[in-house]
Image (cartoon, rainbow, N blue to C red):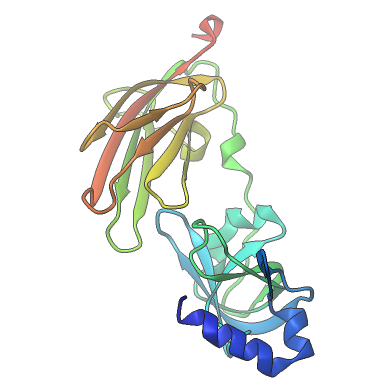
Length: 243
């Protein structure tokens, strides 16, 4: 058991009824989500690792815990995470246990309201670049991925119209879709809708997990031995009439 859990249970017992409502409860199946929201002041920290995530460090421990991953009830908020970087804020939400490897902290707070303090100011939520329409004239494009496991890790993506890499394309998220699994050793990768994966080269190694979908593949990595890997691939329009 981690060092955080005993402190959590101590806080739960000492706080009585209030803690039972605002802190996750223990059940035979594991943790039950808190039944009531909590409001606290603290600092928001943006982590730009292999999976970007937002941390909330309250001024005083909540349920015996000093660090929470922030999730949003309004999923559009994830598109403006940069606005929350290193901000003082008042956060309201329900606390729950992050029971899968997709969470960076043991407990998370599902934020229903986040109010940042000056000098921070929330930018308008930008359009979803992943839904941008790719021009019909583009029948093939080329992608370069760089995966680094140094520090918190880093995933860099670049896209070009030509193999010589002289004509960059943007927004990148419209052309290539990626997402790590919980343990961050498989990067699920797909081209834009209407395209299928072409040639794929991974250095070091060529480990790939094929799927039944011609537009989806799992790129496997060895975080202990591959501190940095590079992947190049092409995406080809799968409708011959538009090539």
